[in-house]
Length: 615
Ligand code: AGP
Image (cartoon, rainbow, N blue to C red):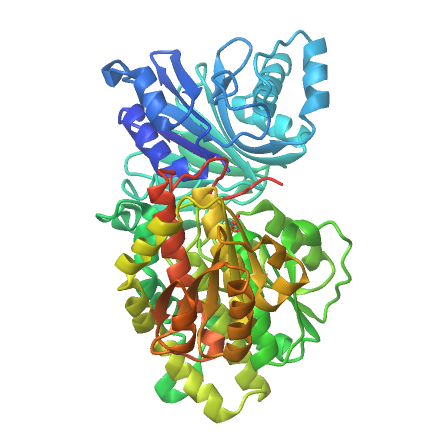
């Protein structure tokens, strides 16, 4: 939701902070700020807008010599995006500054109590309340900075990833985490990096510690790094070796991260199968869930939870597990599931899908299901993030860092892992014939090459985008396995081009939405040969009869729909259950090109953030 970054060591802090904020800007970009501690004074700069606005505000940074500092890029939760509400926030006496990612739910009563004690607030934020609570404790209870932070956090309810810097403790940063992500990089000769994820850290060190909930780090440039929990118990830091490479974070010559990530899909799908798919041996091996395979085999039901694109991947999972493994599946929006008092018991297997591994609603849904005895299996793209740590087992997608806010390669990686899982379980259950099982293994193995073929049509897809870029609405239609793809295609267009778009099961049109059809309505129809082809042809005829403009995704060589459509994109043939891995690609490119042609900010669309770590 927000991006936090901190540094203490022997280098100038500002360049590390500002570059770190640029890498974290995908998490939120309503406002940004930095605070640098230099010679006992805190230089604080913050403003509304993107990190570039902050750089412009600071101008000549040669004066910023301090070797300790914190920085923040915001996605507003409390109070509008403006200069005053930007982080870092200061204590009343100005001696302390703090950055925060998360929500303090009981900030109202705390604010009132502090106001009674004479504290004054200049912002609308919960963060300013927390930093002044720490200030109040530090002063009145005559305790250490760590102890003041610990006591304050014991009083708050909510989620936080905070870094506190105090000019009276110039050699220390105090960092704490609960419900929002935080990773600490351990550099050489007592330098330390703090960030919401590894991207600002990886160029300086590969040694990292992912903080667990309710852990507090005392980071001291002389004494080193100590970890305690909120109950004041010493903890042993688990130092991991970062796998992500710096070049994975760069655009690699593409204009936008989103386009780079679309083109990475042959590799990211291949990487998500690597070591797991062995067609020659007729094997699918998912080591991460091997110990739980019998839970799947005997499951009365599978519940799949997620949000947004991950929820769409879950819908594909429903078709896969029911079709191949013959297990009833329910797909739930995590935000609904967590509050509707669902009926869950220990016979349930819950699959939680998340690219970031930090989505608050999905995390909460996991905790609910776990509390009722269900087995929780994760499918996540960020190693060491909160969701994998909350599950019993799982399989990572190996899509690599996804920086573009609109999810693309993570979606196809999630569907790849779901396909592997469904095949693995189906084979264990004997719910699939050996011949279909083996044939699907080889077909799945060939998918990266088929995705390459679709990407090769980028120019044609861009041409089609130019024709429809100014339409105010769009409809996406699909059937069976491609119904979730219709939803995902519509979401892509909505979130990066701001065009209103809806996805529907194609047969659903005649139950109302067909009233929307006229000559102004572009209708993107996913109509591959595999799966309900004749049915979707009649749906296309229904749309044509109302003058709707058909843009069809068809199997190469298919003539019937080609003649009916204004435009068509040909894709290679594949088994129906593997189609989402192919049919989603042209829709990603369509939304990308339309958004670029509309001069939208493709990688950082308005109002959005890459990871929604608050409710
Ligand atoms: C997808 O393009 C969006 N960025 C959004 O819907 C996203 O899929 C959703 O917020 C879930 O995020 P997660 O996969 O990181 O949990």
